[in-house]
Image 1 (spheres, rainbow, N blue to C red):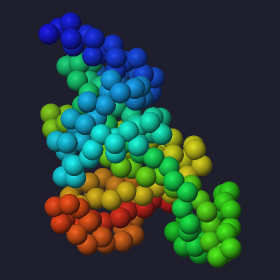
Image 2 (image 1 turned 135 degrees about the vertical axis):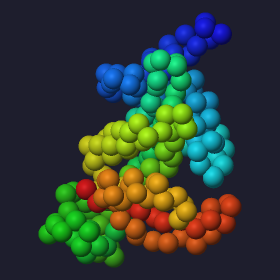
Image 3 (image 1 turned 90 degrees about the horizontal axis):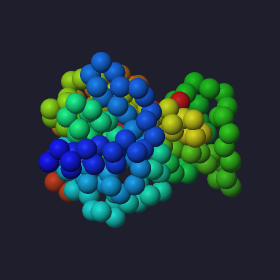
Image 4 (image 1 turned 90 degrees about the vertical axis):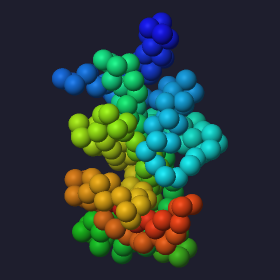
Length: 202
């Protein structure tokens, strides 16, 4: 058992470490390869109500491996949190960007024939922290890191969806990071639950 744990730790730590361990022994590492896929699936399946297929994970992880960050507990040898994201091109009316960011012009975008801006938009598809590691700021650290990467890659904004009933997630994104509610999505999830689409403008 100890041998398996050591092998698993070696696989995880083989990815790029994004920070030195804190006092709590949590290290943040980049997704390396599919040896980490089982950990991502385990965390997301326990934490989120929406089931994902292996193809959904691969769509995110194979195309945007740098936007998947894992939280690793050195003491237990457990991957205790993860965030998974992607980047898309999005058509946005310039006035919406100005109203949201209070800017007179956007950073670098292309205007299409409808006079809308084509911008890079980040998307947080999954955020999960194991129950035993909650209330330690791990979720905040994961989001902070992935937002920085999206901004560094030229994203104008970041979107995500969260269940209307998930007040904890709404407080994290809205109160701590400054996301705003953009849209109510009725019966968005397979369980017929409603969702809010949230957006953060950089």
